[in-house]
Image (cartoon, rainbow, N blue to C red; front, top):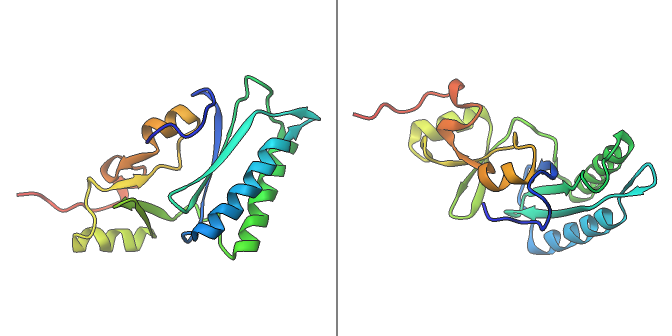
Length: 165
């Protein structure tokens, strides 16, 4: 994944994957809200150095350089409140941690565990399909491991892959 922010690789990130894709108009409105939020974001009245973006018309990334100023619980609560408000306004869910997003032709397709197994069985996807990795913790990890092959994904041990002859 290409570098998306001009912040240190150690910058903490929060990832929110929507249960649907956004139109270009929605993306622009979301980005405007995110930019306003990160510009004014504070924790204990201290300014924070943060950036945000929407990836693949579906994934919100908020990045924070904690070397500049660390964020406390109240600061994190402010960001979660923003995401909840965006979800309400856009009629989508950013908190379904069980959805799996598979990248193909620059498009993300959402699967549940069951539909993911069905797609594997039907050959729609395979063990080399790229999957969004929500387990990354900082920008460096996002840039290097934001998408991983399905066989390396945390859910892989629960899946049955086709046997190659």
